[in-house]
Length: 481
Ligand SMILES: NC(=O)c1ccc[n+]([C@@H]2O[C@H](COP(=O)([O-])OP(=O)(O)OC[C@H]3O[C@@H](n4cnc5c(N)ncnc54)[C@H](O)[C@@H]3O)[C@@H](O)[C@H]2O)c1
Ligand SMILES: O=c1ccn([C@@H]2O[C@H](COP(=O)(O)OP(=O)(O)O[C@H]3O[C@H](CO)[C@@H](O)[C@H](O)[C@H]3O)[C@@H](O)[C@H]2O)c(=O)[nH]1
Image 1 (cartoon, rainbow, N blue to C red):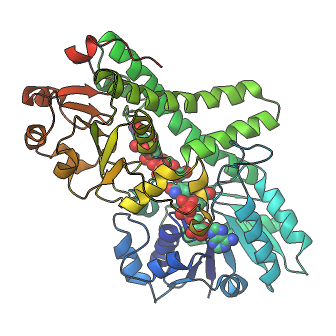
Image 2: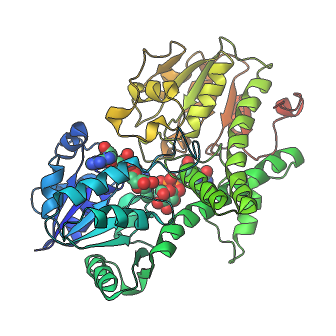
């Protein structure tokens, strides 16, 4: 019986392995992690991550051929195929700080694999890593091998949060990179056979190792670049009276451009886009390609610009000060259908408002008060380390409150900011909200989920990203930087 062990029971390791276990009943899959609370969560009725459809998949195979354990070394030692899906955060110190990937967790996983292995293994890079990481990993494994033979494969993950199960069931493609040797090709075939249980043959792409590693960074850079492109256009729309939704619809009809990933927003968030682009920028700099590095860095600059532009709009519209004014924030997760807040634009927006002394009240259907307080207290990039290594949450910020009721959140507020596109925000009773707010009541829609004309009829002063401006906003001085 083939045994798979995955190191790292996070957003990728958990769902990916659950789907492999479901689709391959004859394979034993064990997901291991150093974090005890995470493993306890995976073994309980309340899984540690929220992902539509995940509960169902886990329930079907947990205890059958899917197991979650903290006995990392034992299960790695017994496995034929070891996936590594640990954190690869941005370095915060030393060479490449603020850009390069920190491979500490990867390296320690590789050293542990070498320590405990007594039989040949296929080691699969599931984490997103810089190009040429496989070479470094190979060196660690081979130098400590004691006769055990390893094949390293790159098998980057392309799932998006909120749709992880759907993406894993029907991936656009599965990418497997390996060495172009007989042993390398045999390892690629072994992994291909796993995916072939449910993924059509023409959707499984095999490449050399470096193409697979680079394809992951390039895919994220291209996706993020589309969002920064439409967001850059959104600023021009506001200046000219064009409507970004109409522009996006018009250009998306061109089959060469396509309609997806063209929604203007307060900015992209999530654990991957910024980290992976910074990583790409650093690699380009290391290979002496400063023009290429600058090109990709601009995607992040526009994203930062979009978030600060939003905060400036809020403050300048409200008579240039939000000091002591209650501002209600609807949505804190980085996108709908997830409780994940890593790099969510809501953090930067809230910090911007708090910097101007606003009193911020937050509602998100999936994010707890503890998480919000941690996020607002944490330094950049601290979030992407295993939980037990993150700084402890200091006593909560007094200017921030979190409620489980959107109407309570907005009661007495001067403004509402929509920062996540949860479907329920389209159906809220905005008249009820308006009636309980200070006047003039402002609504800043960072996700274009409400109909601005309907809300104007209720009485709100409305700002929607990239849409023709409200008369109120037109008459305000242009937002300073
Ligand atoms: N989140 C996504 O949507 C997504 C999608 C594609 C790729 N990725 C990439 O996948 C990787 C993992 O991302 P994630 O979102 O699952 O992260 P995560 O933080 O949710 O999970 C990583 C897990 O690894 C564990 N870990 C770290 N070092 C360990 C060790 N030495 N031994 C055992 N466990 C260890 C941590 O405790 C943590 O639970 C990253 O490289 C990320 O860039 C993420
Ligand atoms: O038109 C759009 C689409 C997305 N977003 C935002 O962009 C961010 C990222 O969204 P999405 O890509 O859907 O979620 P992720 O889970 O971050 O997934 C991305 O990052 C993963 C980690 O590498 C990859 O595996 C996925 O393929 C890639 O889509 C979120 O804040 C979205 O709100 C927009 O602002 N406008």
